[in-house]
Image (tube, rainbow, N blue to C red; front, side, top):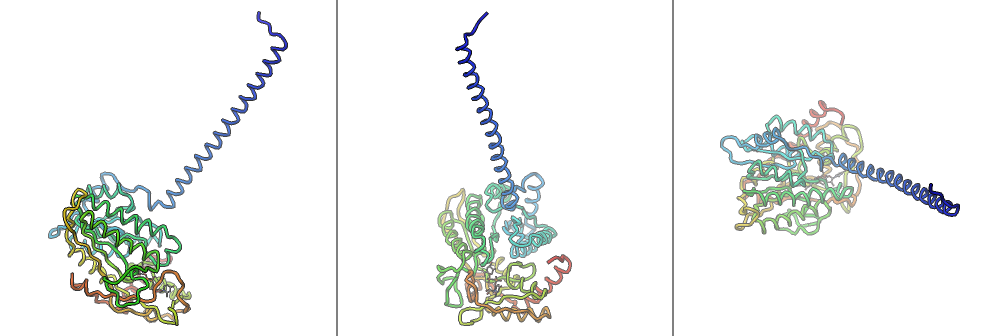
Length: 421
Ligand SMILES: O=C(O)[C@H]1O[C@H](OP(=O)(O)OP(=O)(O)OC[C@H]2O[C@@H](n3ccc(=O)[nH]c3=O)[C@H](O)[C@@H]2O)[C@H](O)[C@@H](O)[C@H]1O
């Protein structure tokens, strides 16, 4: 039998105690590592999932599958007499919905793309989607930054044109959420150009720039050849950057690109973040409205342009767009590069806009006149439209009074049915 002397036993007991202590410590470390590791993983996952839900409009995959592909192809099929298949981005937006419906009405194939974000009431976007659904225009739900989705769409359909209207709009909101402008108006635009340059055949692109690129210019009316290097808002700066990026893609890849500088577009199914829209809402509710004025009490004015005129401008520029010249991602020759003003050529003071709304709504507004905050706004806009008139016969026909009359009718009708506004 093996016997152990006392000193050895004491050493062994000490060692065993050390082992037990080490083992205990190791177990403790493992235990806490597991707990902390678990917590970190949990936090990571919940962060990811909360990012997913907050920006689900940007990242969630809501596309794919046989039925989805069938719907895309059906929607893209031109009617008899048309050879155009148009991808309209921002199709659930204000201008996008009207343009998609007009293209479809005349027989073009149209596929919409929209992220349905919540910059403003998404239920209005869903209502517009319903309209387009009834007109047989399918809106794909997805982000213009999703290159896989864009590739898939171009694999399914040989789009002849892309009408790129998706954007982060609004001049003043840029101070609250600057990165959304970079995401949509710069990264998103590049993503669209990338998809178009690689497509075979390359489509012609028509996209929404903005009157805001004229920034602090004082020479009026604004002409396309005027300088546009002093933007007053980040929104304007991203649109201006877009015009420069368009130049690059045209130059390197032979993409045919047309930018449209829209001037304060208004009308039925409009954007609730725009002044004419929320003035209407607040006047009806008896709430005060702020009316900005420029330095030395000068009136602020806009070249308000009615949506039907803008739609005609969009279709005219699409029809007069030449084909892109590149293929396989390579330029084969010089391609068309244009920028047009689409305005109304008759600026109206914001105070006049308010008095028209008062008479149409038969309610007196509670007006608060105050100096224009430094929030990106400019004092005056006025479009020279002769370039668009010469190129494709653009001629706006709706004055502010008649246009607002149509808007107010729609507004009262829409919110009497849809309520909760
Ligand atoms: O042409 C464009 O490219 C842009 O047009 C539009 O911008 P804007 O012309 O600034 O329109 P909008 O906000 O309706 O303000 C109208 C007037 O009301 C004044 N205004 C505004 C708010 C207010 O509380 N009080 C006020 O007086 C304000 O000072 C202004 O004079 C689009 O939103 C923008 O996305 C872009 O497309």
